[in-house]
Image (cartoon, rainbow, N blue to C red; front, side):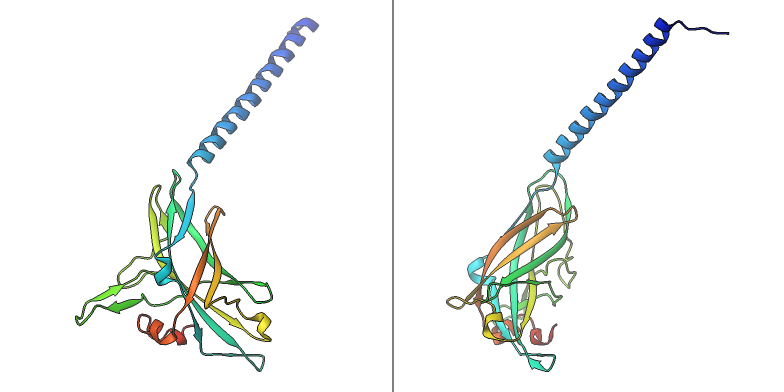
Length: 216
């Protein structure tokens, strides 16, 4: 039979407590180090408009109908680039456009699939194609994964449909509409940019995206 004195039991309890405290401190330190590495290495996305004076357009689409009332439809075509300045690759989860109305209400628009925009170059049969963000096409893969130090680019198309009084229309100033593009990666991290869309005739847009007025 093994007997322990009170002093021996106290020593064992003390040693156990020290070991448990050491393990706790080690776990905390390890957690802090992991958090530090995560914060240091995490993806860091930035978004910018490509040739903002050339490619960012808004245009009037044929109106529709909602609950028996006529609606007004507007198309928005943005050409954007997204760069990952972090030390870890990441994929995009969403890219949405927010447009403010005359009545200061913010309307959220989701991207709509379109064919790759293309333009015939001069008198030749050669065509220039533009990528569509997150969409596989004839010329581009449409991937949304961005390597560390890498970037992707593509066009994004949105349609806003409005009805009721003029207060529900997009706010237009000197022929331009300003929207906020918000991108989000798969970890929930967001980045945004304000884009100024210039008015473009639907006929001109149809030359690079045939039948765009029928895409919903």
